[in-house]
Amino acid sequence: MRFGPGLLIFLFGAALLWSWWATEEKKRRTVLGVLKTRISRISDVSGNGIVAVRGRAKTGVWGTFAAPLHAEDALCAAAWNKWRVSEVAEAGKAAEVKVHLSDVEPTGRNFLIEDDWGGVARVDPTDGWLEFSDQKEGPELERDGDTCQRIETILKPGETVYVLGRSKSVPEVSPSGPGGMSSGTQLMIHGPGLIVTTKSPFAIVAGTLIWPVSALAVALAGGLFQIYEWCGF
Image (cartoon, rainbow, N blue to C red; front, top):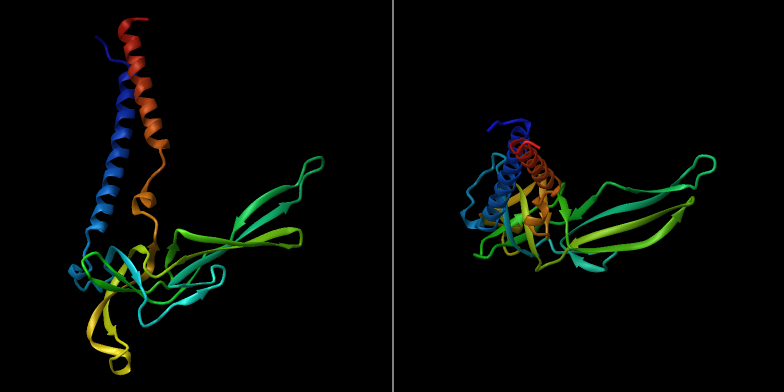
């Protein structure tokens, strides 16, 4: 029995498939760790430590604001413009319409997040990446032959939210305390690099299936080629 290039191809495909599985398993364990993180057990990691928690968004002393497109009270929001631009076509060809998205504009106030065990942390959404399930599109406005549409997504009080970012201890804000402050401290999650989303973290970290399918195809091709050589066809 001799071994040819087919075996090497098979082993290469199997290695790619194992590498993809190991990466996805690491992502899954990370997400499960987030779902079990208790705010009350997070120590002061003010040295740019990264934490991730899940909980219910709550209104703090900072209140809410009226989101323009939704006309609803929101804790924070993100908005961007979608442009449909007609580009000049070459002679004999129809004009091509391309879609361009502007930079996301995050807005919002500080709010609280309460986990399933009663722990509470403060979230500063400034400079954060915000993505929520509640999304609304505004009317399309025409400008110089192109169209522009405003898109807005918001976080409302009571929604389940996932927050990942840097953390530090700050004085606890209390409406009854002197100067708005109490004698205690509170964990605050902030940016840069902050992520605030209502979407499942499993969906966020889910990768494309191109790699595993390609790796499986390579492994199968190598295995079939090796069998072909063994059978002497």
